[in-house]
Length: 118
Length: 118
DNA sequence: GACGTTGTCAACCACTTGGTTGAGCAAGCC
DNA sequence: GGCTTGCTCAACCAAGTGGTTGACAACGTC
Image (cartoon, rainbow over the protein chains, first blue to last red):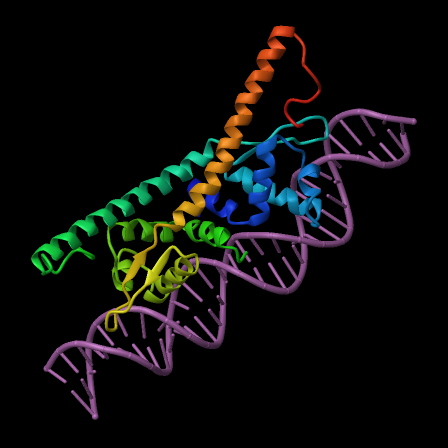
């Protein structure tokens, strides 16, 4: 499970963490800021941030005893690329299926036994 | 964890399941087909498929004793929308930051104490 | 009807995860 | 120096996850 794509997906599978990402889009925040809206301990939030950090979605700076959290938007591209690749393929397949169906309609017969599971 | 977006992300957090999605883009497949490339039991694959099905990423038909698996590409849109929303916001913030930096450059001074965490 | 094929369900096991509490560290303030 | 503030680390716990094996149901074939 150590590859980054898996970690990114896993990190965003938690609604609390997605919420934090949403919050961080507005601007950097401290751990305390991020913890405020939820009724969980600060430690729990710190754990969530570690998950996001390991996924590369977030980086943490240092400002005296504060640790400002910053969103790293580039990682989103990794996901978008993965998704787009397969969505496009799926759509193309959909179109190809339409062609096959049209061909079947013309001849009133399936072209081969294939068409869905080649 | 029951909301669909969480389930979709969680489903795709596993490399084996992403692999299966990739395979299904080429065309529908049976459980046996999907199990073949991996050295895990058919039952394990069946479990993976249940996860994908619950996430709405996949649907299962019936063909005699076979259960053809079909990819439901529409669910990808859910993710893409979520990602795009926040990626755009993050980019806009980036641009705004540039403006602030440019302003600081002009005056040789920060406009306010804000700019990163409003 | 007996048998092989295809797949699911149930029980179990090792490991991970999201949460807790308690201790402790680093930095600013009295 | 002694205090609070902001945060992390460590240990623990209940629940979930990915894997196994064994039993069984549904269907086609002999």
